[in-house]
Image 1 (cartoon, rainbow, N blue to C red):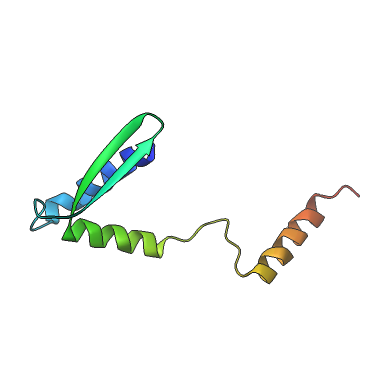
Image 2 (image 1 turned 135 degrees about the vertical axis):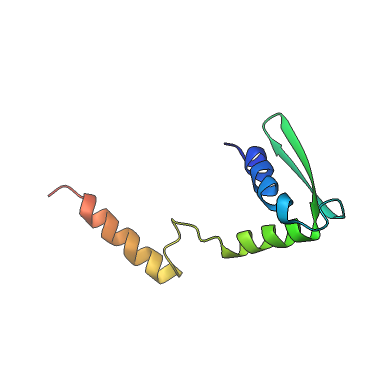
Length: 82
């Protein structure tokens, strides 16, 4: 699934419970390779997108810089030949 398909699926989940899906407050343009998508977001859809993006946590993010360095050092030690 690419980003355009993900956005389409995301918006299709919101639309059934959106009281004003046709009242557009913002538009998002996306390009993935040659594919393009233009998405008109209602207030509810925009707030849902902001909420999802704000709650996202990168699974690779290991914390602050000192913590990241410590975890990478531990990983490197585990993979060093003895």
